[in-house]
Amino acid sequence: MTLIKKFRLFIVAIAIHFILIPLNVFSQGEQILPGTSIRVLCYNIRFGELASLKELAAFIRSMDPDLVALQEVDVKTYRPNLDHHRGKDFITELGHYTGMFSAYGRTIDHAGGYYGIGILSKYPFSQTKRIFLPMPQGAREQRAFLTADIELPGKQQITFVSTHLDHSTSDVRQTQVEYFNNILKDNPFPVIIAGDFNARPDSPEIEFGMTGWKRACTNEFTSPSNSPRSKIDYIFCYPADKWEIIKNSTHLLKLSDHLPVFSELKLITE
Image 1: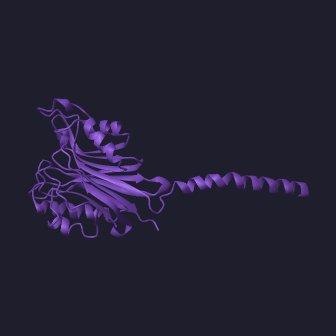
Image 2: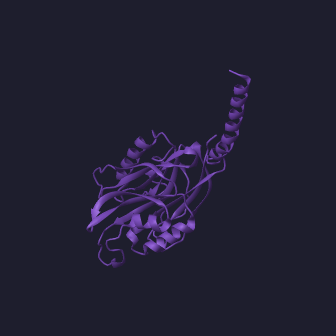
Image 3: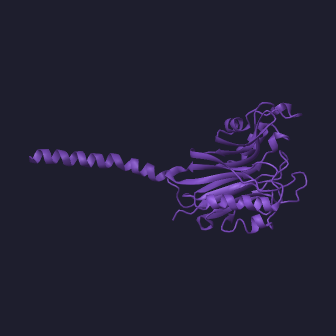
């Protein structure tokens, strides 16, 4: 190879190096860096009995969440005395009004449509899955949990879960908690689960069933919204040592018979 050809190759290599530098810098800026937070909202909306979808969406937008777990979500139902919601697709409309991605998990057929749980996300899903919870003796209604693998900036992934446990007995809920623990504790990504557990903090299903999870919400009462006297709505994270709580709150709001709970978390990536 002549000296001139070697010189030309050297110039090309230098040029490529300087072209790639800004691309690498951009990629690093997309990563989840220490201090980056994830804002989580959990809300049982009671099939919109007390509020319009636009009112619910306005509240969600005001909290600027990254992830939202919703319970008692109707799709295309025709409930008596709820003419303002007849035939509406709650999860799709809430996704539209908030500008978020949406996923839905039907739990039962009801009033000509579906009743279940939902997720809204600021970030894309890599996959979603609805998993039915067991119905041991004493259970009154089919319940489920909805999982979504979330693609955060920087190719970091977490799993976000919305659930709604049976309201019948503690024994039923203990079985349901044990069931989702057996699945979620082997998850390849860090997990956030949020939902209406229908259980107080001193119940066996919470006190013992959620051992190993970090409770990321306040202990303030969440039900009923007009005179709160029970804490039954929660946000938990797993593994506990992978998460840091920045702040959390429970909001006095009468758009449902439950109060919404909020948490801002940091995923520890070091």
